[in-house]
Image 1: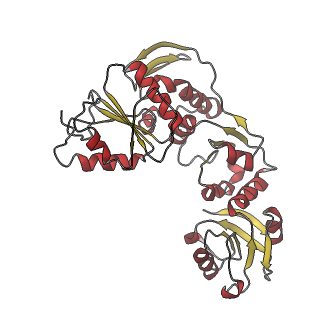
Image 2: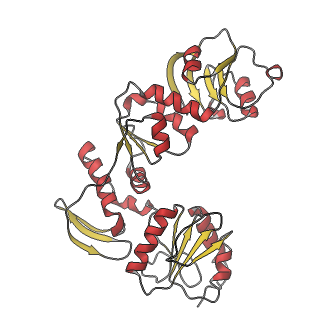
Image 3: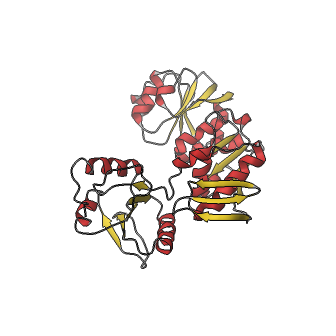
Amino acid sequence: MVQKYHNMTISSIVDIVDGTLLYKPFVSRIYHIKTDIDNIIQGDLFIAKNLEDLNSAIEKGCFAIIYDFKININDINHHEIALIKVDNVIKSIFKLIRFKLININIETYLCNDIKFELLNIFIKKNDKNIKLISDDVYNNIELLNNIEKIKYIFCNNEEILNNIYPTYKTFDNNIYSIKNIIYNSLFKTTFTYNNKHFHKIKISRIYINDFLKVYNFFNDNFNDNIDLNKLKYFDYLNPIFINKYFKEISNENSSKFILYNANIKIALKEIKYLNENYKYAKKHIFIQNKLEINNNNNKFYFIKNLKEIETILKDREYNCIYIIGFNKNKIIEFIQKSSDIKSIFDI
């Protein structure tokens, strides 16, 4: 993660982050800001998470370090390093980003998780015009790299945006005129919009407005026809089809599938959609027991780990398994392990 600061002075950085310069070195400028210890080169400013990284950064030749933990200055071989003590490194990162953005005109938007995911899958890898701000604050300092090429910033975290660019706009849905709509399945939809026919695209009807908002963004601003095949990477109401042995299969006509979401609010929306449009199917909802949920309309099984699903479903029939609060990769790993033997899910 390389950030070009064009010879930014250490005294300016101290002022921006409201820090205390514990040791004044002979060097007065830094050239890049890093948060990854493996990428440090001589002349960098490093933002340290712990004492071990701080010492490693010194050995690699950084000129300045921002940190917020307790150290014994006499035990550190700091030589000519500018040690900048702050109350909170996360807030310091926000301040550095905000300072860099303050005089730059970039269209900045707050969007919901659905649109954020759609933007993420449709943005081309080499597209430097659009920057998505994640919840990983340390990674967000990357925003300062090639900032002059950025035209649009999107974030799904209101708190982060308030800290780095409080004059943001909201990336709201419009009311779209959709014609000839056909609900091909719970997870695929056909429709016509603005004289363009979308045939069996892999998105549920409840997310069509979100999809069209993102579609129009790319079309209006970049005259870009997005690759609809990328919708296979869209993780909302994106089923994992399984057979009776709990083995993942590609057959979308299977009557058994798994859905998942880490966001309780979105999960409840999707479960409501299933209840309304898949009424007679046998559905079982599992939720990580660390999560709190206030909903009396559904029966939930609170579980510590995914292995408990096997025991609960041993003597139960099912069509849909909905899992809340577990990582997708963990769910795939669980399915693979469970399908190695003839499954107790066989009914």
